[in-house]
Amino acid sequence: METLVAAYLAAGVVVSTYATWMALQNHRLARRLAELQALPPEQASDRPAHIQAA
Amino acid sequence: MRNSTFTGLPPMHLAVGGLVLGLVLTAILLIFCVAPTEATMGDVQRIVYLHISVAWCGLLGCLGMGACGALYVARRNLDWDHRSQAAAEVGWLCATLTLVTGSLWAHEAWGVWWTWEPRLTASLVLWLIFAGIFLVRAGINEPHRRARIGAVLAILGLGDLPLVVMATRWFRGVHPVSPEMDQQMRLILLAAVVSFTVLFAFLAWQRQRQLGLAEQVAELESHADAV
Image (cartoon, rainbow over all chains, first blue to last red; front, side, top):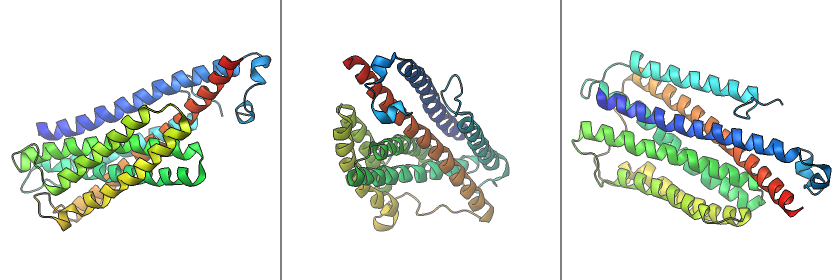
């Protein structure tokens, strides 16, 4: 029974660690993107068109 | 679309994630509470539902990595590289879980944690292919060069897939060709495979989206530094 529980626990730990890491990365990237998109116009005009439109 | 404050994910994505989690928890409930106990191995046989599910997802991840790599080579669009990398990461996670759950089951069934039999060896090679591709990609800064080399390695890595799948038929070994299961067990196995596939597809989708976001941020930062 311990082996069975260990197997499912291992899977749960691995998947939740990966999902948590992704959530933290998303948080960091979303915050950084918001900072960069709030840059003054003289810096914004040098952005590629597809990012200005984003 | 308005994003959730902490994760930066749109609410719809979080809702889908919640549904996926519910699906997986339902499958686990079926495995532990509905699936009959196997006569020979007892309760420890329930590892097989997880083992087969993650093994299947690992193979899908390898296939996705190679297919998206090939599409990058054909179209030179970094979105395909992001999909390839996301599939590789999730595939590697699943390959890791395959080896771990397989090892735990092997200790109960065969009395050993590991044996150099064909399917196990091919599965370890698959894990090493994933790990090797990550190491090579980590050493390359330029996105298109990294994508090109990653794609070539991913396509070459596909060569291990038929070995993993057919090892039990082509070579003699101790790994079972297919598990001995009654009808109810097979239905629950199908439910487990489907739910874990949906889970890992969701993770790969979110990771691919995140890689695109990271590329956007990198481009904006390089333009901000240039000014």
